[in-house]
Image 1 (tube, one colour):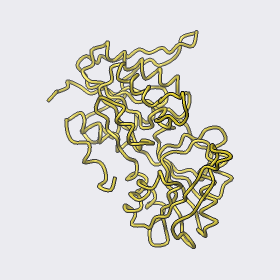
Image 2 (cartoon, rainbow, N blue to C red; image 1 turned 90 degrees about the horizontal axis):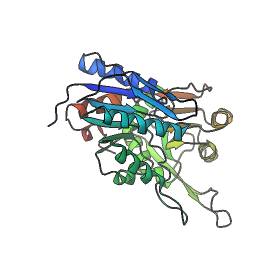
Image 3 (cartoon, rainbow, N blue to C red; image 1 turned 45 degrees about the vertical axis):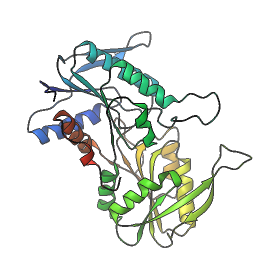
Image 4 (tube, rainbow, N blue to C red; image 1 turned 90 degrees about the vertical axis):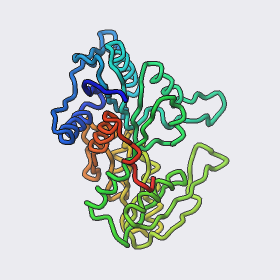
Amino acid sequence: MAQYSKRCLFAGSGAVRLAEAVAKHLTKLNETQQTVSPALVGTWANGETRVQLQTNVRGADVYIFQSFADDVNDRLMELMLLVDAALRASADRITVVTPYLPYSKQEKKVRGREPIAAKVVANMLRAAGVNRVISVDLHERAIQGFYDIPFDHLTALGVLAEQIRELGYAGPDCVVVAPDEGAMEKSMALAQMLKMDVAVVLKRHPEENPESVETAAFIGNVKGRRAIIWDDMILGGSTLVNAADEVRKAGAEEVVACITHAILCGSAVQQIEASSLYRLIVSDTTAPERAYDSEKIVVASIAGLLAVAIDHIHHNLSVSELLPDEV
């Protein structure tokens, strides 16, 4: 197996704090100082992305972090140029760490003459010279099939479950709620971790307006209980707010949401603040660089999980053993 002379971590503009947190965990794991290597990441006067690695990476095992909460296309270009810079500087292996994979909601054609953008991103990363990808809670697991390189798909469920326990949401008076059929698998896994029951909101698309969504049925008992809604991501917030309202109508005493990827576009934070949600628990996969202006939002860090995965990869150990048995 390959032996690397050193391990280097670099960060795009969207993931500096996350990379630094992972470096601290790696330092503790190995009892050896690990830092984020310096790199120039900015723009030229005409708006073109400018990148320069400021550390020697010849023969190194390189990990490049990037987050995509906003400015997605600019950050994607940063990532591509960071990869190319490492490749041209003779890095031995390049792993991209993108906890939230950009364009992952565009993983299939919904209408005619549409692209499959998630596949385009996969092609771009492979063509740029990426050897491996680490991501968390993909919108669809099948996206892994777009990649002809090793793809480590982690889950934040364990981190989020621990945060839920710390906040006191455990016991027979609590229930995990899937906001739609697509969230059932992960919701059931979370419920199994927390030893709770599961409920699900079934939705349908009206024929007169196929782009809208309405509740068709509610399955499960939430009456008089504290409900925990799990979903992989929150964009504008309206879907989650509506799901919370439906759960309250079904008799839930309190509604908490648990989301891996908190993209929170536009007025999403304001919608959450004004909603019936009591609390929103999120991971830091997408927005480690910004603070949320809401007392309802609690952030659980996945830095420790990423650090262990990176350490396993660097030392040629199994990554699959880091996944919960239920997932």
